[in-house]
Image (tube, rainbow over all chains, first blue to last red; front, side, top):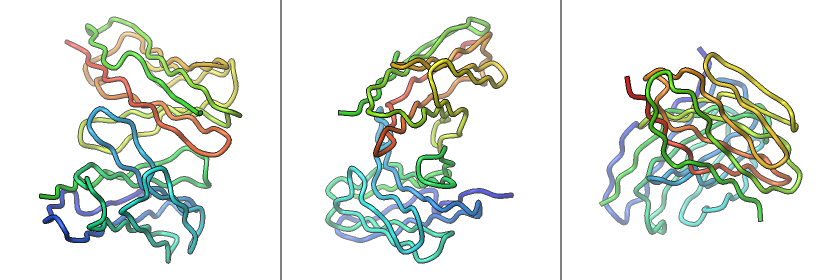
Length: 112
Length: 108
């Protein structure tokens, strides 16, 4: 079955620690995305990648970093510079940028 | 500035009571409008893509329509399992913008 996996489902960290969220897809999609969702708000784009070894900042990239070394993988690192990291993080992919996106199950990050 | 607004924020219906959700948008150069369904604590699930005014798509009890300024998601004779948050997203000239969603609750 093709799809997108995110791990872990729940993640707890202490303030000041960096944390990396995993995202893997086997849909053979070129484009991948990271979004943040806060209660009562729409999805906000953190980073996106149209192709391997290339990525662009979204609307709220400060305090986050990504890499795209393989087509299947697009990990997101939440750094200690992110002021309000507690949120629900969603990874998505699409055939190319602008096509309908397919989402993973999400990772809920709690930083205390 | 590109904008997407969904209304209402929340909608409670009785089972079988048909209604519509609205997605109003202001973008320069619409390249596509997407509807998603999101269950609590899960990732959004893709429903429809609409590309041009007048286009309609249907799936079971859902029908999406598009005009030059807005899209409607019509739900006919809903069932409790249709309860979810419905998200609209618009692909403008440069990026995709998501609305904040409509929380739909269907009472048995």
